[in-house]
Image (cartoon, rainbow over all chains, first blue to last red; front, side, top):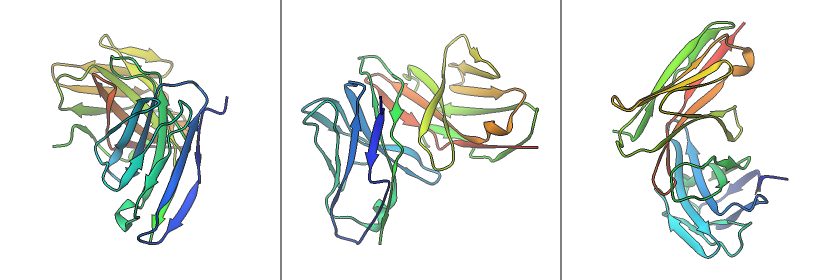
Length: 115
Length: 109
């Protein structure tokens, strides 16, 4: 099992450019999510999905778009990059139960710098 | 006020010593609690869940105090390899996870 994979590992963008961060998992997890991690802020939820065709907004969704066409893939799109989106982005997946708090499996992260 | 708060540290710990730190949460409806470990420039990984009765995993002990709304992590006989950032995670219904900012621990020889 590869677990959760993310590409690219690093990216530099200019303000206004768009790009897609890729995330894939091979554990047949229903739940997938995207977080950004900034110094002193903890991980903040951007968007999440509880299954193919179902997505919802997290705490900081503005400027980001997601889709979930398959169980395995959950790409994150930056529509028009801004310097405030400079961050480390983590994708995570887990089983989904109606209760709270399944173990989250994180990808290795994508470091994004927006100039 | 942040939903989940942690002392950012760093906690400088001599090798072999014991270190403990807390995490406070504001949502009284929180249902599940976890400690994740994050090494420098790496992804978070689950260290342990925190149960109401408290639980141990080797040198690590986690406690939950629902009345005062905090969880704690204690590391005994600290190793150099314990140097990391420890993230407190609180979960409410619907898998809504809230992460603390992390507590940095540095174990020194």
